[in-house]
Structure formats: C-alpha cells, structure tokens
Image 1 (tube, rainbow, N blue to C red):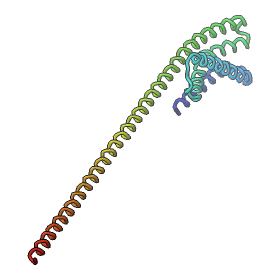
Image 2 (cartoon, rainbow, N blue to C red):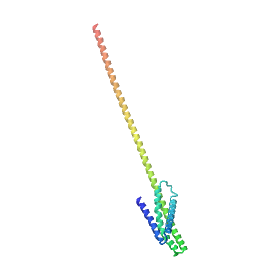
Image 3 (cartoon, one colour):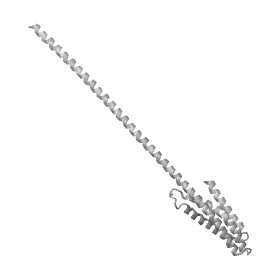
Length: 213
C-alpha cells in the first residue's frame, strides 16, 4: 500500500514538473492556472470513465480506498501523456510563434488521443471490477460452504452425544434393574430359608409333643 501511494505521488510530481517546464517563460500564475486546470480536467475525465466502467456491474463491496487509488493513479498518467505536449503548443501560441488555428488542431488531435486512452482505460477498469466481483463471490461461496460444514459438524456432534447419552442411560437403567432383580432374589432366598426353618421347627415341636404323649 505504501509503495502504491509513493508511486502515485511520484507520477503526480512528474506530471506537474513536465507541464511546468513545458510552459517555459510564462509567469508563475499562468503556469499554476494551466497545471491546476489540466489536472482537474484529467481527474474529472478519469472519474467519469471509472463510473462508466462500473455502471453495469453489480458491486457493493469495493471500498472507496480502492476507487481512489485507481483514480489517482491514472490521473497523472493521462496528464503525462497529453498535457505537456499541449503545454508546449500553448506556450508557443502565447508568444505568437503558433497560430490559433494550429493550436486548436493540435488540441483536437490530443483530444482524440486522450479519448482512445480513456476508452482503453474504461475496458481495463471494467475488467478489474469484474475480477473483484468474481473474487467476492468465490469468498462468499467458500464462506457459505465452511459455515455449512461447521453446522453439519455441530449437528453430528450433538447427535453423537445424544446417542451416547441414551446408550449410557440404557446401560444405567439395565444395571439398576439387574440390581433390583438380584436384590429380589436375595430377599426371596431369605424368605424361603426362613419358611424352611419355621417348617422344621414346627415339625420338631410336633414330634416332641407326640413323644410326650
């Protein structure tokens, strides 16, 4: 990011310096007016081209930072390609060494050249925006698939844990039931033993009574 910003600054400096020295002996006020007007015109034209390039593309997630970087990158490039040449012709016109008609013709030629450059840039900007849209769609699709996988994993974990809990509960219930059955068997054995002892005692009492008679 820092490298790109530095590159943009260097391009703007180069564009301004070329225009400044192309105007040669004009006073500083006229030079500043020409440079400011030329740079503003390039910014307006580049912004319009950028807007046209994104007009038919549904895109909402491209940041303003990206837009500004593209715009401010191509403003000085367009300026370097056209403005210094026109500045030289304008300088000659101001000092009477160039006819006004020739100046206008040169301006028209440079305008056609600039138009061709802007058309190429429009196609280039559109391709960039489409690539960004495709990248965003891929990221959203990947994110959706990841969320779906996470949801399935959570569902599987919940199902597994639920089944494990059910198995554990069944095992516990079976163990309790088995314990109750064993306890009942022990009680029954004790009762049977007691009944047997009582029968034996009664038999002995009956026998003792008979002997006494």
